[in-house]
Length: 220
Image 1 (tube, one colour):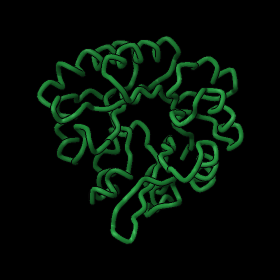
Image 2: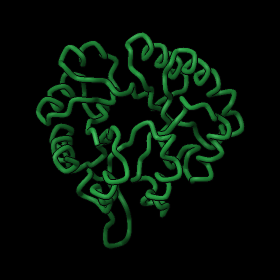
Image 3: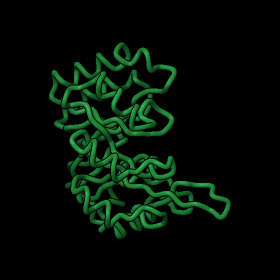
Image 4: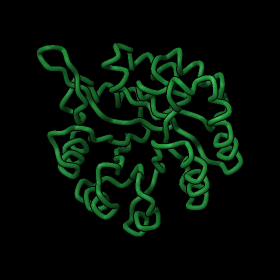
């Protein structure tokens, strides 16, 4: 696996660059706008992260094309929007196709990619090869969905993966933690997936740079 991280936890891009240098990570999923600054620092941008409003999706696709970034990572919208997905996402999908950009949608449980049946329905709506997944096993794990089987079935659709983990307390309640602090076997994951992995840091017990250092070390 090639290990990098999502820059969203960092206040600015320079903090993210410093963390990348400290860990030896060479590739970022960039939630900041400064693509040129990242490249000047000798780092690569695997994707522009735009996990917010759909209004930002088409500008992100244009920016990615302008800067030579191959992927825009985003969300598939929420269940209330399910019937309008072709209308809401169709223009961005068409623009991405015209500009040679891949769109990667994270399987966040609150969106239209909750269950594997949702995934199948989504790709029936958007069958083009440039539409794919940010595969996050942590969501599947606590949902009780076999992430191994999901990865096997949808591997051709996986653009890259998110690395975060899940831990349970004595009452069975779950929370997101850094890889290596939860129940997912990342050695097994690496045996099944050999592409880019972006650490998604949502572990409240670690500061951004400290957490990235821990996770990069564990995944290597």
